Length: 572
Image 1 (tube, rainbow, N blue to C red):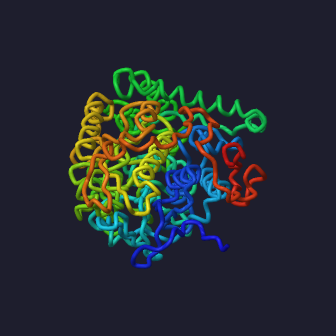
Image 2: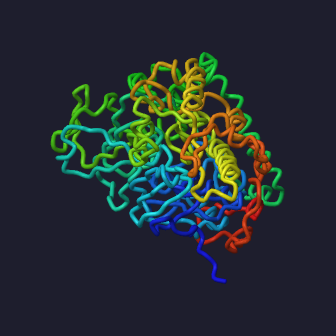
Image 3: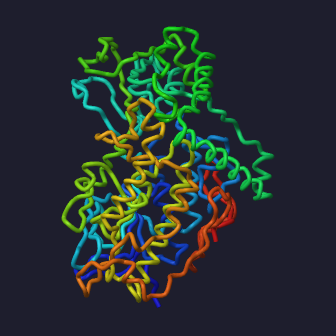
C-alpha cells in the first residue's frame, strides 16, 4: 500500500491540501512544536517557513560577534541535550547548527515547507478550520500553532533623509556580508543586545566607528570561555553531569527572579558590579558619565559583554549620547546637533515585539485581525490562546518573555500546554479532529488572566525601574515579560483548564462551554512531564514508527560543523 507523505492529511471540500496542524516558523518554537507533535503521535502536520532554511532568529542574525547571552547548556531543549557545546556562551553558528541537527535527528525535514511564507490565515466558521494562504500555495488546517517569535521582524526607524543616504544601509538582523566594512566610516545606531556585540567585532576593521546612543544600557561582564575536552567527555559519558550543570544554571536564575519581580531595590548591588565593570575599561570621567544609566538595572534588558567598554575606549570609536534625528546626504545629525559623516549605517534598533507583523495576517471568527484585537495591547490566555481565534495557539506569546533566564524553558512549557490542548480537542471531537470541533478561549478567561498578570507586573523592575523599554507597548503596558519564575509558568501551563474554553461543533453551530461538553467524556491520556531544569528529561510519548535519520546518536551531520552533536538520549 502506498504511503502518504508526511503532512499530507488529505483534501478539504474545495480540493485543497488539509492537515491537522500547521506550524508557522522553524526556530526554537516551531521545531520544538514539531518534535512534540510527533511525540504525541501526530504526523499529519506541516511547518511553514518563509526562508530557505530553518533556524529562526539564529538564522537571520548572522552579524559579526553574534552570540547568546544565556549559557549554552540552558539554552537548548531538555529533550535534545548537547554534550559538545564549544563555549559556555555559544555563538550563532553553533546554535544554528544545533537547530539544523534537531531537524535532522527528530525526522522533521519531511514536515518542513521552506520558502512558504504565510500571507494570510482566515478562520472558516462553517468548516471550523483555518484557510492558509502561503507564497507556495494554499492549504487548510484544523489547528494553527504560530511560532514566528517576537525577534523575527526588524524594526527600522523613520529617519528624515534616510532614503537619500548615498552609502550602505542595513539592519543588524539582515547583515550584508557582501559589503566590506574595512576602511569605512561606519555609524552604529542603537545600544541594545546586538549593538554591544557588533561594536567590538567591527571596531578593529573600520576606519572610524560612531555609536549613536539614546539610552545607555547596563552591561555586566560576560564570563565566556571554551568548554574543555574533559568537560565534553564527561557530559557524553556521564549524562548526569550534564543534567546537573543545566539544573544548577536553572536554579541560580530562579533564585534571582524575586529581585526583578518583587524587590527591585535588591538590585543595587548588581548596579555596583556593573559600574565597576565599566570603570575597569572607561577611564575618561566624561565618557563614563555618558555610559552610566539613570534607571534601575533590570528595567531594560541587562546586557553581557566583556569587550564592549574596551571597544568604546578606542581612539577610533566615538560615542554620540543622543539619538539620530535626521540625515543630510552622507551626514548624520543627532538630536543634540552633533554631525557625523559616514559611509555606512548599521541599525541595531530591535524588532516588532509588541506589534508582531503576523498579527496583521490572521483573521479570526468575527472577521477581525489579531492586530485589531490587540490594538489596545496584546493579551492571550496563559500566553497561548486569544479570544475570537479558535484552534489558534501562539508559542512565545504575550507575557511569556524572560528577563534573566532561558526562553527555551518557557517554550517547552508552552509545548506541554499545546499537547494537552490537542488531546482535549481529540477527546471533544470523538473520532478525531477532522474539522468537526473547535476550542476557543473564553473572553472572560483571557481578561482575568491578563488582569492577574498585569497586577503582578506593577511592582516589577520592568514597570517601576524608570525606563522606557521594548518590553512596553504603545500604551505603556508590559505585554512582553512573564512576572514570575519559569517553574511557576510550567505549573500554570501543565494542563488545559476546560472552564477557560468554549467548544464549537459543526453540527450544532453553537458555542458550548468546553467543560460542559467534556463532562461525560473520559479523561484524555496524560503523558509524563519532566521537571523544569531537569536537563536530559525527554518529552512524553514516543516517536512514530518512521525512523529518524542515521545521525541520531551517531556522528554529527555535515550541518553540525559548529560542534552541536546531539545525544540519542530523548531522540528515539
